[in-house]
Length: 263
Ligand code: ADP
Ligand code: MG
Image 1 (tube, rainbow, N blue to C red):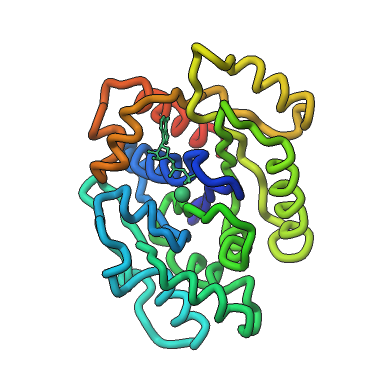
Image 2 (image 1 turned 120 degrees about the vertical axis):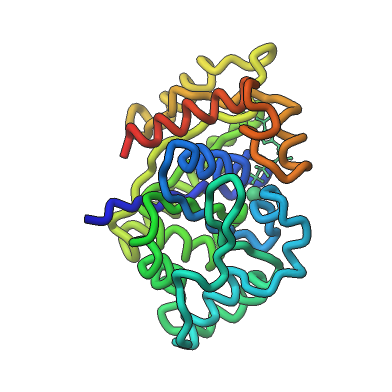
């Protein structure tokens, strides 16, 4: 039986560590021996770049092309087309600016919300986990991602927690669940970029608990703020490779274990 689970890191806020979390979770899972596909679904190509592919816009076979093939019902081999094998043990469907044009074209397409899902259904048998990194918007591509996913991971930046932003996202998730994907669930909220000297995790958890009760899981693991994370992104390697003994690598390892345990 195929137990593949499809996760998405989502938030309409930028800079909350969606991309960092998607990459770190994916590589964290691969390090534990799981077969993982990372899917970059942000036209900025940040996940692609953060894994060392420095010029996403010069790439040809990307998520936009795959989605176009799905729209046109073109014949292609979904198990290989557009899939890169990264040296840290994950597979990656890269993404670039072409996804922005595709987002506009999608408006005209029949069943425009389920294009990505059709692709994911074809490849999920090949993997234990698929992790999708989404853009900071609630546009049609992100809706496609929410329709294709089983579980959502919501990173929130400790210092700029936005309850209003969270409410919008949770409302959208509710709408998608009712009309397009009743299988969709929130795996949890991940507190990121936590600076222990100024903000206490306890206070944030209390705030979130006051707003949502125990309805939404807040991961025990909190990701600390560290310049090592920025350096890793800039270098195009994972945090496990850049600073394997550091506190961010340790926190993402524990987070990965929590996600596995939740499944
Ligand atoms: P998003 O995808 O939500 O826009 P990113 O993952 O791209 O967020 O992160 C935004 C920036 O913050 C990047 O430069 C990244 O390297 C940095 N960053 C991510 N996690 C941390 C962390 N724990 N500490 C410090 N900087 C971080
Ligand atoms: Mg991002």
